[in-house]
Length: 211
Length: 190
Image (cartoon, rainbow over all chains, first blue to last red; front, side, top):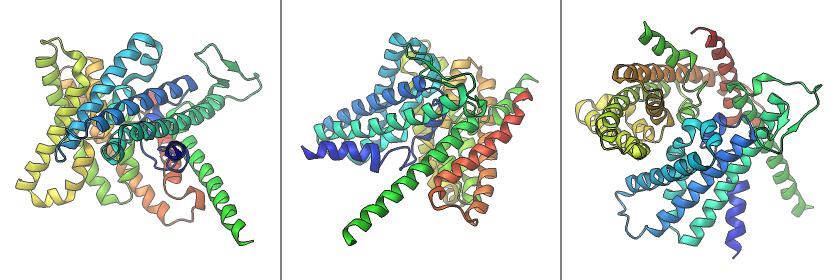
């Protein structure tokens, strides 16, 4: 069962979709203004990814090799349609906040890439855990990015939910972080910071065996 | 007059890349060289305009009369994928030089969220046929403008001494953020 932790670790840390692979940046930049939106988008994408990876893996014996991409696209679009309708029915506020980025999960690079490079070649359980790892990695990245933007921009955390925390008045609210430029700059700096930490850790690990 | 405003709004004020965050993947991925950025921008503009026109017709004359609007996501994706394929085959036969310049970027366009994003915005805003096409053309040219400027910036970044951790994507994102601040200046225009 060691592959479970390996897949989860891979999705969250070593091959994180946003911080390492830098794919699916459109939703990451667009709906990361508040933690509520970021977490909602992350979980919706993770759920679609789980659904499509399992479906593609289950159907891989029936999908012809040459026509696989159109088949994947239809499976993904079907899953997104279902999730879109579910969110519209049960969490209408989130549906309104995410806007066109909810149907746009259908063209999210992570979903197609995992189907093509993993689920089409692997068994059902493995594909499910691969999807969980990548989905969690995406969700964690979304929460980190949106928490930073919300704190710096609004001076709050978890707004639009019952858990809202408001920082003291003296805390400066920099409106730039809520506007589009803030998204680009925050993600760029966060990515660089994580790379710096990763490089430091790697250096440390390499030094230990020598000494 | 309204059409001109719509065009300018899609191209500059609500620039697809820098304010709406649509089409970031090619914007970051294919902007290392100026020539490839120009080819990508033209290819996107062309497919965007064409797919908006076709999607409008399919949505209005098939999905609405049959009461199947809930299938719009699947329908739009299939239309865009089919159109990209047709454009690719047409270019290969009719203009090999243009094909070799644009060809490699065409398959990438299928999963470009700017295309389906524009189609969905047309649908949500209830634009008519002419408005849809004008909006899409404006959005495409806005994308072209943004990616060409950005490619120019990146060619200079390549030659400067960037800290190790910022090399590649991070510095590109920060540069895009600064460009986005410049585009914020247009927001009072319309």
